[in-house]
Image (tube, rainbow, N blue to C red; front, side, top):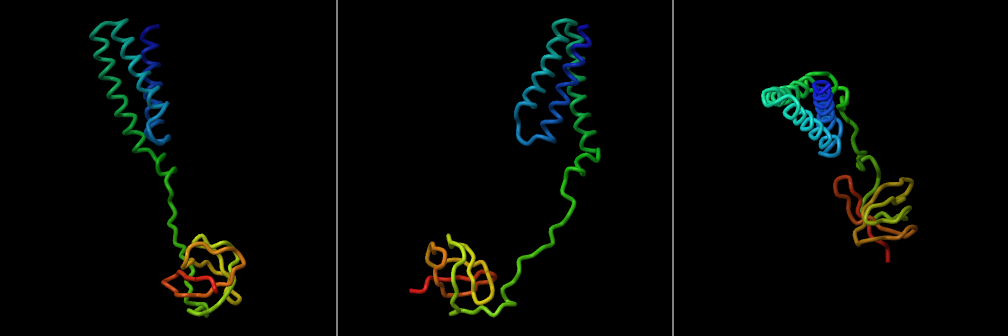
Length: 155
């Protein structure tokens, strides 16, 4: 009965440690429970079966943990959890529009400091030049820097 208890404690501890290492981020309850379970199994081996059995159990536990981690790393399980697709989308460029410095429009949403602005027929994301701008405020394009339209309120 004592040998079965030691084996169960160690197997449960190894399973919890592998779960903690590969499936749950950080070091939390499963990792601590796994270490306690393995420690309890080794303690039971020393206490009930003597020093030699305790040493053998301790060495077997370390080897079993290493083998379990190796097998898990070599399996295809991690490949199934990893992202396999490349993201090939890109931001739409402003160059295709007729927007230039000096154009006027109205804010559709609040610019804090980014928001939506209607310039002519286009609804485009813009950045405020001077802090926050409320919704439905008339704005003027100050500059275009890369893909960013910079606007300021018309006074």
